[in-house]
Image (cartoon, rainbow, N blue to C red; front, side):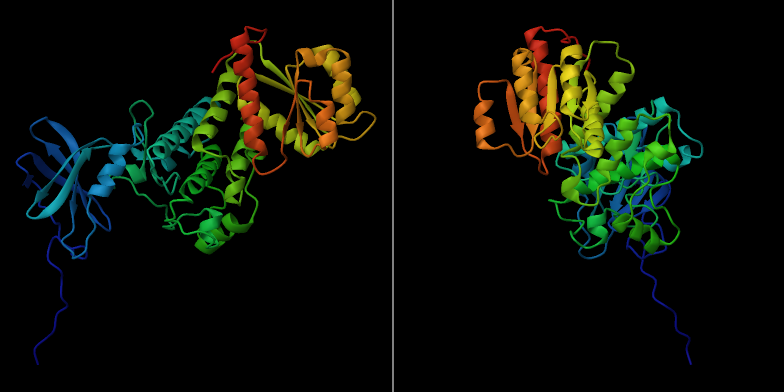
Length: 426
């Protein structure tokens, strides 16, 4: 009886064991093929040489399989992001009826390889800022990044450049070792990872994860068992940078904790805003300018601490203090003459929020200081304060954003008015 042999797909098909392009083969009379770099669902990637311009390039060739997706979407995604985190796309064409795309060749090592020893504070902040800015630029172009980790970011030796896997034309993996997005809402099935409405919040969670990994060398909840790792992302509190790296600013730890919120709506509003907060922290470390004076009056210690940290991240010019009750706040009004005062509308004690505002009006503090009441304020109390420099913000899911905006607006207002403290950085 004749022996049987299994069928082996010919070269050019996804499941073939053979290379779709031979070493030395020339594509479009321009690109000479060298080594194979990677195989993906939609094509094979090669190291190649542009013989006309005498430069290294990456060439991706589509598979022959029926229904194989076009490479145009991936090439356009890379080309749309104006940031060093994305490779430059040089062009596209066809070879023997198959689509190909050509981009710059990036060489380096996975970011994970840099994290064997702790990064210095300066290097840490530079790396984190580079990645936050990259995600912000991608979002400006309408592009989602997906997985952001030491396994999906390439560190190039030239000028500290970092390249995101999803924007590398498949030269760098787009997924980590477990092959999936780990944002809690995806892990629990609350949202689909391909939902465009969920993409920005997923990337913000990814920034929180890479911030932890850069600080410690390990991603949060890292485990060889994927199920335990996913369980951590879905339900367990993440580690705090403040508990692991005392050399890094405490406000940075708070920002990362915000990024890692389990509920998407509880994360920062955008990567651009995260970048602004991070820049404020970095600028403050090297700034000697006179700050905008902010006072928080709140008898809830935990919330006062949260507002203090958030205020310092709002702008590098913000110097933030707290007072736990009205009489202490009254003392600081006389002593420090703050520019901006945030008061819990439900403030208790000897002097409540309305009495504090009235006291400020009595000493003419409201002529130079802006008061903001946080929370519900009765129509009667609003009427009493109508002629004063008092505004109101709601205590809801948008509180953090409204608070950030108010501090930044205060800096701008004083800069335009030329008042003391108008010389600010950032």
